Amino acid sequence: MNVDTLRQLIKNCRIKKERFLGFPRDWNPSRVRNPDATGDYFTESGAWEFIADKLEAGHIFEEISLDNPSGAPAIVMKIHLTMEDPLLYVKIQIGDRNKPIGRSFHYSHNEQN
View 1 (cartoon, rainbow, N blue to C red):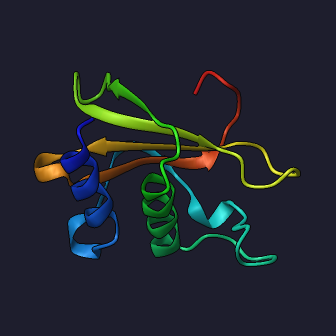
View 2 (cartoon, one colour):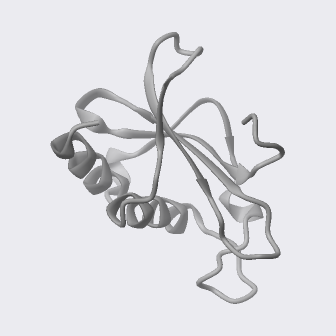
């Protein structure tokens, strides 16, 4: 992914009217503990900010092509939150004009997500 595309994707993650939820999805921020808010879980907006922060910080992601919709570009991140929690699995479809489309935000069930 080129730098300009990534920069625009990060910016759009932070703007409510520029980010969306796609289908199919497993988007459950309210079931994932937020390590920055002791005892609390992510909110919808908090999940998007967290994703933008991780991308901005250079967290490793994998670029993939989705099966549904066929060939749509997306990124996948697996994020260690705490020693006690399973990996966080995040999948973001990249829409027109680099708008993020949330597809997955949940604890990883296994490494094959």
